[in-house]
Length: 514
Ligand code: GAP
Image (cartoon, rainbow, N blue to C red; front, side, top):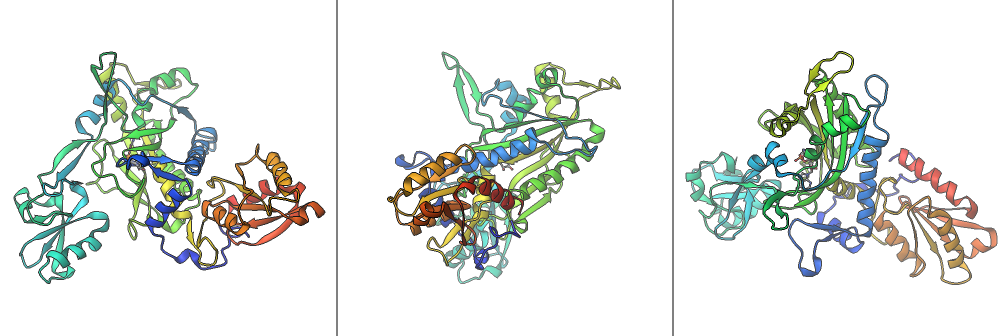
């Protein structure tokens, strides 16, 4: 978003580091995101999206759907690729999750602390070991290891400094050495248990007598695989083609943390691309390029996004290669956190479902008559993680305005596209404002805000990231003009009341192009 009036910022506010606490507090204060069951003290790992949060999430969701299903990318042959949509049930036959490997293998290694009763993912802990072979060893969570380790060393390190320690992942430490470790929140050594597998699927019961165990889906992808045959038989698609789905997924995460980043209920945007095995490499590269373009189209700073190939030790067993899209969140800075995985899943899933269901998953090429089980490339993105990246990217500190900050949302993401603000609640101004609102509301998400002093109303619109404010004042009834205030520059100009709709269409489009 650079190169036009709206995106140029007058101050050097973008250089300020954003604090997660400020983002969480803004989200609550302005109605983006609330803790679920807030009035009952909340529930760990669950979040509710308020009036502005649901608009923001829907905008990101709709942009993905638009880019995948309504107007899919142009393929290497110059024609649009074929992708159809799906909305499958959250609860499926439990055999689906046996076939997919989730019932047996969807686990995280987890350790408990016997002293504090806290639970940690074993692969998220780093152990600080004194180089002089003394004890104790100190555990710290990976995403803030140095900071926490320094505090722990001050307390337990017998005068040592950070440089007197070397680090090892907990998973690389022999269980008999656990007795030397003081857990991240413990006061004495030897309280961490051996890592144990912890299944992430949530269970429920179905049927009148509640006798069948079912699972809340751990990913939207399996709903796609089990509908591959139905889709092929009913929609006019041929390999290569894709099936896209957006929806809730549930994982009983050991340690939900970092606001909505890792939650137990979240939303995914997944597309399974079915292709001939010999073309899988070509399509893998194609989807990486497409997904790069997409993430850069939502207003995140390109310097804060990386595209990282998984090393062989990181690959899940069914994947031949995987690429992650990662964002520099305030809590991972200077590191990055995953937004999307683009995996070459081979024919693993279709073969599994073929074996468990007995239904053939072969595709018969109508031209060559070749029979084969298609291979799959899967761009799997987190919608709610994407929302967090958009929020972090938009938060812009600016000491030169009353709110001290503004949300620099890409206009496509902004929950409210424009606000209409009569300067006073008299002299016919509210009536003009209402007429303007009625003329715009079919085209845009508009807020009509009549009360409070104008400075406070501008401050609120800055905090919720509204690109433009139209102000009705005394001059409006005289010469039929309104003031437009630009969010990013705070500059104001007058335009004809009758031109507001076309002006807004044009200027949102200019701003979106950047
Ligand atoms: N079908 C493949 C799959 O589910 P994944 O990497 O486990 O792959 C895809 O999930 C995306 O879903 C992740 O990149 C992340 O954005 C999002 N995601 C996964 N677990 C999440 C959680 N606990 N909370 C929020 N988002 C999550």
